[in-house]
Image (cartoon, rainbow, N blue to C red):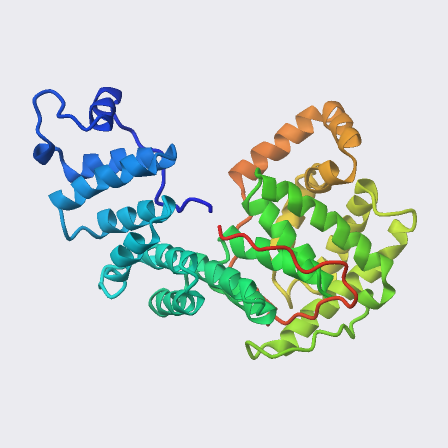
Length: 379
């Protein structure tokens, strides 16, 4: 189970931490005199190191110092959850859900605890309640989508992740899960788009490496099956929004623009061929569709192209998955350009914007798929 965002690095003076760790007063100070905030920070350090029992011990002292503090009670519930005392965790978190000051994280932790007790219906209600209070929460949409996936409600899970992208376009988790789901569908457009956005938002993790492989494989599947390059793509399924026309128009424009460049990949899907394909796609898209379908990802790619960094960017996206030795060789030969790309991306990161979704969250899984969609991630 991934740790929640509340678990952040803390700055605690080592002598003080050691005194509390053995539960003795330090420098003549009694337990009752230790500020609750200091106890809380110490407990978070214990959680970070996996010492959940000591975290519970210290958090109980913090709660005694400030019995109504939502943050202390919430962290205590989470520590109990981490040490698998689900009864105490449930008792603590349940009393917080109706509080006016309950935040997004309160509902996230509650959802985890309910699921640990195999109360999936209760977890669903918790997430729905949280989303009524925080309708623009990408994290709660992500968690609810993951729960729906576990219940094999794949269509609902996908629509929930897409909704998370719509309301909170800067949160990476929904792109990750949606891209993986679309990869196993007949619609490779969104696995390509969401996957690339995710790699930009979460640039250095094991999930990034996985997504690079999905992106490369999606291009191969797309061009390997001529039916997937037609505008008459089968995406039948229930609607989640009323913009199906714009969705189909955007997808049609994307696929038709790619198809016009298909001649450059007749020798296979390689990093070099993808650079040429995607460069021609951008130039064509800019002249035909940029005004009709503004899209932050394509605008970002065009900026990289004008900066002379688009080749390096594509090497960064596809190189490690396509051919590791060839990518390392390219880096050795173009070290300055790669460093320039890193500097530019650090100074000018991709920033997805609202109202550029063009997606209703519909999905049809491929027939005779060798395996089911991969398990989603919660963060």
